[in-house]
Length: 496
Image (cartoon, rainbow, N blue to C red):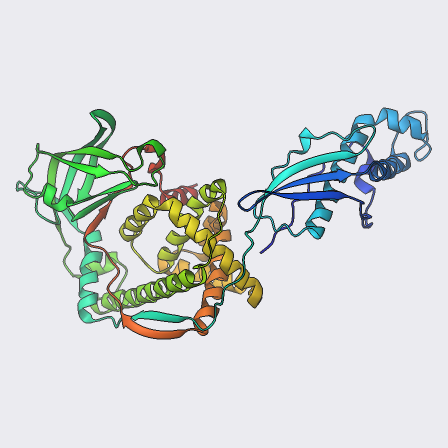
């Protein structure tokens, strides 16, 4: 929704008059001259001229307030001469006048000009001084919402993926859950698919070392995904290796890696095998059921089925949402400023991870998805921002609101899924700033729901979501700075 230009914070002024002056009074409108120019995609340059007469009026009002309450030795309160007030409180008066002029003019610009800012303007009050004579002029840049015509969003034709969860689906996922509680046992055998290897990994580019990763535990899957690149054929590369072997392969760095110079470059990776382990799944006995907090196998399978059904709903929502957003943003050919895009990259990652947590995905599945997102972060964020602006217009058009009950319901659901107290979940979301993402997420979900309620559907088969052919590690090839993940940050916040 459109935001107002933020008010300038007032400094404390050393008189009682400053605290009391103006209480209950509405400031008179100023006779401003405002010129707004386009300064780039979604950016406006604003030039403001405050006439001398308006400045003098503010000065006069401030002086009168000080005269009524200022305490000066030798004079009764309310009887200090105006000239003495202007001289004795010259600095305080100048600061107060500057703050009032800026605050009042910015508020008036926010009401009069159709700017719709999306970020705090680039405005530093300390850089301005009100002149002793003549008009006061100042200028600033502000990022604004893009201007576009809202596309037709009702009556869309949508393919809706559907799936009935089978007993075989449940059994397959039961084994995945058991794997989280399994024991890794060292083996004196060559590597096979599904084994775990502890490896030292070194990356080099054109013969020059980039970085090394020590003692990384990796499961041998067809694809190994890092934050800024992935190695297809990882399973074939490692198969048959034993401790002491060095397996080498080329990896192409993502075109959207944090390290700009390395984008699209091919690096050489060397995996030195330290040991090989094989996973032994726990027995399906009472000891195991107690560990996962279920009474028996029947309850275990029931919970897994419920979780898989939630994931089907999540995938169905994501698939239909994707189609909706593609349709309503087909005409969104307007540009976005790069600095705005970069600011939103981590925010977009947080929101996706939040949705996956709510749907009950495992940390490993979330890690796989996070690394995929990081490899395409810039283009995906650019796309997500355009979707956000279009949905924001739908929210305005449909007058969609988020209630405290909506927030409570989401937090309660997250607490149930994680086995935590709702208060603890809320506190963690508030501390990490994700609570604002949650509110925006609910609004946009309601907007998509409105579109889907008015859509025409054609059902199609839905494949299972979990990826057993991809292994992810939370490390980058060439940029150690990105090794802290969004999920890790949230856990750090909770720990504090």
